[in-house]
Amino acid sequence: MILEGKKVLIMGIRNKWSIAWGAAQSAYENGAQVIFTHSEFENEEKINSLISQIPGSKSFPCDAGNDESIRKCLENVKAEYGKVDGILHSIAHANTDDLRNDFILTSREGYAHACDISAYSLVAVARIAKEIDMLNEGASIVAFTYYGAEKAIEGYNVMGVAKAALESSIRYMAVNLGKDKIRVNGISAGPIKTLSAKGIKDFNSILDIVEERAPLHENVTTRQVGDATSFLFSDLSSAITGEIIHVDNGFSIVGV
Image 1: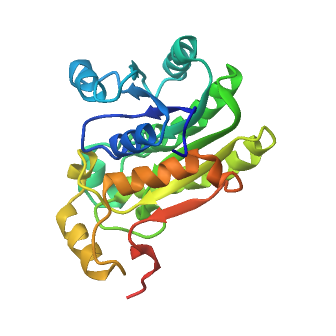
Image 2: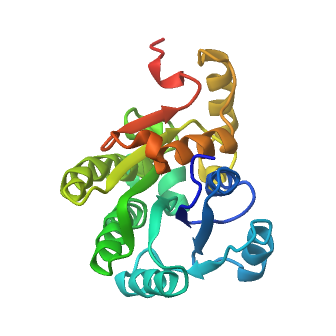
């Protein structure tokens, strides 16, 4: 088990269809102690029912758009579990209208909101975790992104811009945190039917195109993305930082 003896914090759990849940299952089955955070707007009863499947786990509320909430959340995690070896950032949000309408119609407020929650929150989490001495030496930070950060995907709109900011932030953070032997990487997952994906117009057609054109001719699963996350948490990836790893059955390599 490649994560034996490690503690990992999964930030942004929502339900059993979440990519974060696939990551949590993989981490646990690879030997890690798993801790969670959830949005203050989520149903805590449902969250607790879900994570009860992973012994010893607990979820802490966290408002990713508020530094004081992030600090309080991470301090509570550290007080109860001590330092961690990995943090997964699986947090993103954009206003529905900004996903449904043409990108050029994105409001200033909607643009700022998407980038704040989906990208800046990673910077805030890493900075605060470092300030409170929450990360063990050799810790690994992983964030989820999507191909819409690289190419214009119909319906992804402002979230594509936010994910592009996230990916650039990962590279700069890797440089900053490398001196502390902390690694930062991103996983660009193929499209998956999650609650968030419902906000993307004609999402099912994207799944059909991937299945048709990806070299492996199938869509990726939450568990496959989770296994890649476990790899990045593990010492097997100790020389990898600042990278965006595509876990999409090869779709991103195909031209036309």
